[in-house]
Length: 279
Image (cartoon, rainbow, N blue to C red; front, side):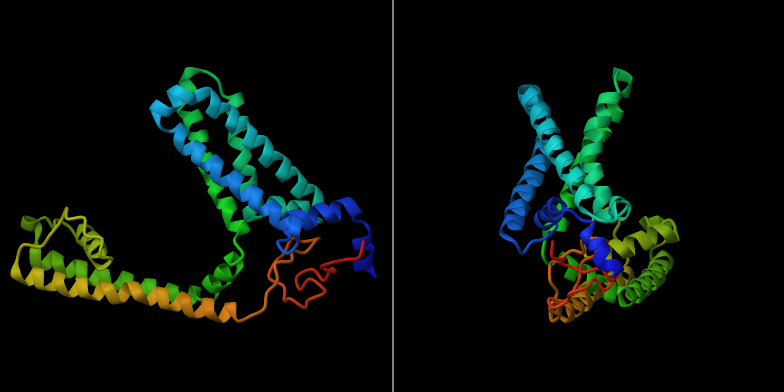
């Protein structure tokens, strides 16, 4: 009875706005997602272009106006999200709620910071706008499945990373003994850095073994690197395949903004409210 009373507290307008903004199965929801994704991509591109001095000098005013246009668009979106959701505080403090706020906050803060002595701070605020690209993750259908796969494999990945950490520590210490300070391996931390760069197949080339034994050890580490890189990929792939087998809908709870419900679910498994109330 309590859940039904809560559902009735939502006006028809709030429910429709929630359906458009948070749902991806409805026609208007799909249009909203496409428009918002396009806006995010364009705003990020504008931030990148604004960082190029020649473009900023030539089109600075146009970029400034475009920045404010997208800021207003994202502000309206953020306000509508808060208006249509049941638990506003939970959404505002969630990952995507914070990202939505960061997408608009730097532009408004730049109005409050004036003076040439604060130029670097303003530039920093402008750079923060690039984090709007994080908003894209909220509109990728498989993002929830990927997050579930990462959570399911976190222990295996942690053990894997711990094993690699132990391995590079041993190999780095060994290379320190073999090569020594005369060949650039002046400390164990520096040697461990070389082992990490080598085992990940990055190979900056700023540090290289000179002795025959050191080159032999390096060759073994390089070969090990190929197999080590494949392990976490395989772990996440298996968990992702297991998560993909589940039939999960894109519906978002009207009250607590939780996702990951089964397609045939009628009630939220997190708060118990009716997912799609009749209004």
